[in-house]
Image 1 (cartoon, rainbow, N blue to C red):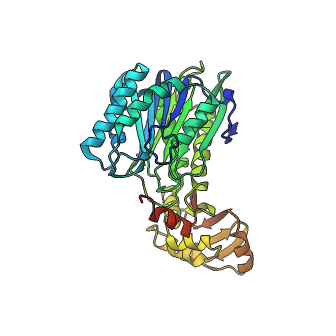
Image 2 (cartoon, helix red, strand yellow):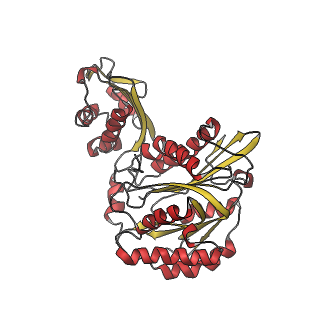
Image 3 (tube, rainbow, N blue to C red):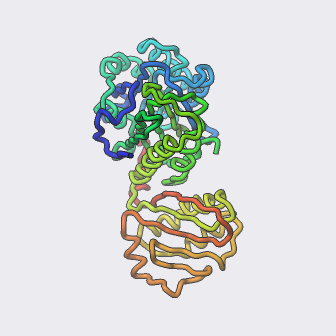
Length: 407
């Protein structure tokens, strides 16, 4: 069972975690910009990070801390409004200063603190104001739905709304809860290894070891966060963190289908919420690629279409210009036979055997594309490879937002 409502009930949250959100003073708006999660005891952890070769200081620290702690986290500290990226040694010192102060504030080891940052790149992070805000965060921290919602809001940047999802499953007669929060609206083209900044934090109360968590997380991310794109830009700060508090008295080992399905549902919901809140978005598009020679080929074609400015601007204008889809398929680098390609907009057949379908109705196709959400199905006739991928149109509002982002 899943729940995508921000107004969560208290029993929807996994036990073992407290949440806090305070205003440190990074955002000029005065809105909360420092969010924390405090685990009652060291939580098992697994994380995946951006594939961008330019990586923010907190990601460097995260890798060091995860290796030293053996995949255990007590405190997650997320600041918004400053990415702490391209800030050199000063950025690393700032991230470590926040971790050291958080460890002292919450009574844990420094390497049990997991920092994250999101916001503008290339601006020094004022660690001192985050450090000063930690006592207030400690006083505020609670294991309540209200504080979880406050956490979800405080990590936002250009997002217009918070994004949360929950699920439950039954393992060995025990109820296991999963809850997640994420942010992202622009600079979204995640490539989380291995495989706007997107930050996602998912929590469960299951009893799990870090290595087991890692396996579940990799599978869930491939079907969710790695299957969405807004603009194709891979952020320097992308991070997905999965924590298990072990308070539910339900042990989950590898291969438990119920847990995997629940985790996948939470991650997919969060990923689709990111797409829906994309900067300037007026259309959310589900690409259904079928009949590729492999799943990898299907994904490559989906990404090529999703990143084409010509395709995305056509969607913005509700223009059923399917020729742009054919062109993108053709330059995707995937081996195809054009005469085998079929294209549908929803139930409307547009292209048959690589040419215009005799059933093509331009007016009907145009009307279908006026919906905020629609699907495009492409059949390649090359094999059994397939994928689903979610993306958006490209509007003038997106240009305005990103033309003025730093000024």
